[in-house]
Length: 476
Image 1 (spheres, rainbow, N blue to C red):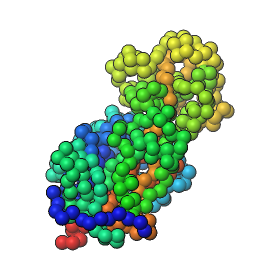
Image 2 (cartoon, rainbow, N blue to C red):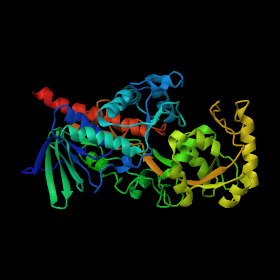
Image 3 (tube, rainbow, N blue to C red):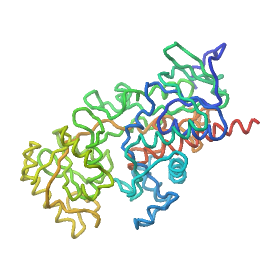
Image 4 (cartoon, rainbow, N blue to C red):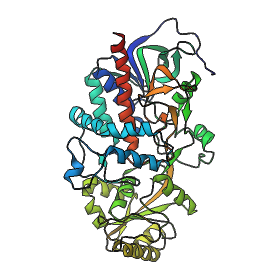
């Protein structure tokens, strides 16, 4: 086993029971869990602002139930932790670890209930579905709502947040010993923090690091934008590997199909392109034709978009679908998107096509063909699941949103077990080192159902924090 331990610092600049690296879903969840159990917690964030990718997340959280049983109350059918896990494993083409996935699904309701009860999280009344899953998507206005709920819990229990501090090294006491602290770079220079109980890595993925993603997926060059914030650069994975940590699934990198075609940002328009599919929206190429099952997993839609050979592609829907999704949008948001050229609208599909610069008559023919599939309930072109909830795309006004794939989510990372312990290359847990969120691998596999990228870091962040706090209780 090749490791880089080095001599431990002669002195420590600061100390806490638990040191959490990262302040997104996983980091704040871990801090909240550890602090609530009585541990002193320092959260280290390298960016000036907390939240990372979590704060710009669209706000979906996948859970088969919640304490209010909202799914059952809305007559959306039966669901279970087992079905949630099965859907997640299938979406990942069964590369996900069944034990990790089962834990995520089983603990999803409790984590959601805690954020609502203790963190003041407010959710929209309706539930919705995304590709690869049923109606188990609970949603807020954005991922920032989940971040703020978890942050409130963490700070209430005494955790402290330090921004502008980049992880430089993980200190491990010998090749087989425990992790005892970290080195961070701040405006005051290098500082060493000792963790009396544990270090939790919650730094996110590496979607913004072009060289790192190309090392595993060479096609993902600088020509691809990324939805990620600029701090998603993966150094925690490399630093953990330098002390013996194992990693897996690093080539499993998701490309989101609904980003802005120039900037890669997941803006408000991305939310409509993503969610209005469930009301009957379609996606067409520059030729004006459907090219994919719109409810397929993100990677499948992204590959199909790239295969059209021309950017961008277009999400198409109508006013009736917008009205059906009133819980998921505001008139002001639509007006802003229209004013900024993110969304286009017209009275007819022919007129809409002219605005988008694509053949409107072909869009009209495409829409009519898809509407013809609704009554018999069979999509003869792309086998899209058709339900009674879908509205026909047969009356205006109509809307179109130009979209294009961007690097979005890195499903691979550090190997962990169901207790969020980081596993070394010999298959044993590294003592006192935990990880949660996009810095880890093994949960999502080759693809993921929507919402699980919020659920998994929060569930495993809570587990990591609880496990770290339990070390103190076991030693006492």
